Length: 525
Image (cartoon, rainbow, N blue to C red; front, side, top):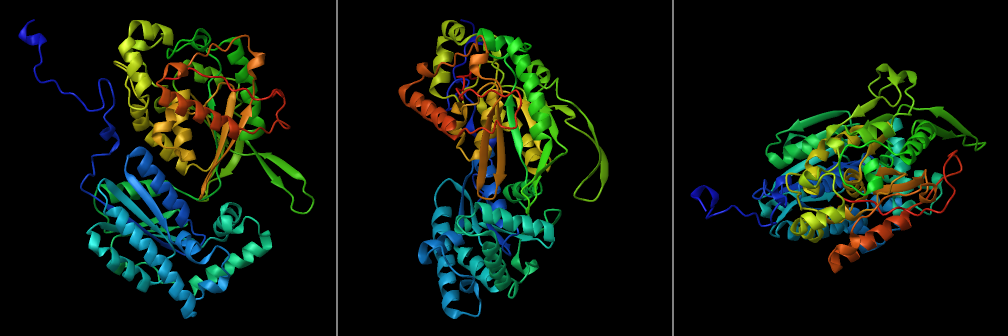
């Protein structure tokens, strides 16, 4: 062996050969920096929504241990959930003392959390309406020597405020069994109690961001990697209702033969799904439905919608039958009017499937025979394993970050025609799943997944457009049974959980199958 062939001190990463170092997504970038975010603002201004989105983003994309401390949760834990509006009267000393007790309990646990090794970010979610309260919070947290960033949400637009209140009514556990009129009246009384004593954030509050109606942002004295990363993220957020749809491409020639990767076209079954997807796009994705409050009659009208695909042939062919009609004078939220081309295709390299490197174009059986060591490594840890000269799920996470920012800021419905590996990560992010479970999420062929994010989570609905029985063969062969026992159990449980959540609204879907949903076991990168 020549000296050129021998490396006496190789660089070995702890995750193993071909694995992705976890630090590539930010885990080690801020190892010496800790940040506490204090939410501030009147009720129904989007504080909880923003806090949840920040926490999810930092956990998923930057691998930062982040936790929210919602003072309302502590208040309900101490004094119950059915508290009248009078409980929030600032002139009532007894109730004020109880609310301060809840705040102090949250601060105590926040301090304990931030004192732990490896923890990076903590969020205190509350109105913090008075400057006296904010001074108390800053003084109490002073023992940690952490950066503190105040985020104040301000909402004075009637339409936006009413939407936020409706969202709270529909999603907050306190109001779930309450009539609409009663819930609105109760919430408005609570908000009025805070309005009477509210002190806006100013320079004396230190580093802060003021958000006006999710349109105007004032950033004051904010420095450092983490604070600026948070500021950039929240500038992409809004609380208006939105929905997006995930669809894998139709069955491809490689799907049929059990091969992974490649850039093959669609089979006849794939083209049939593409035709049905076009109908679904026109009748559902690009259609708004308003219900008359008195008669209950539905009024359907076209609404602007977006279409994203990857740059690969099979996704473009799946979108080929979707019509691109012109909607005149679509009005943006800033008042500008434009002519809108419905479902104008946008091919995005970020949405391309995970690249399998030297294994691209092989079946799993062929990979196991030709690269048995690689096959075994992948079965041990699908999240961080990187194909030789290819990619890993962690690599995909990096290139999906700008896509997620686009989804967060977009108002119109989006139909994303992509791939299993891509949709697994998008689904896991919005549904609040840990990254470790993303590679095992069930994303079957011929099914559209509708996701509707809101302040307290994300609602899911699935639509089966082409049943397995209508296809001669699906060619799916994911090797779940070859996984180690523990990993196999996790994968099978996650797929069962995904199937249990599936529901279908087939009444309005002409040409949609009425067969029971039997999701295919798709090939997995």
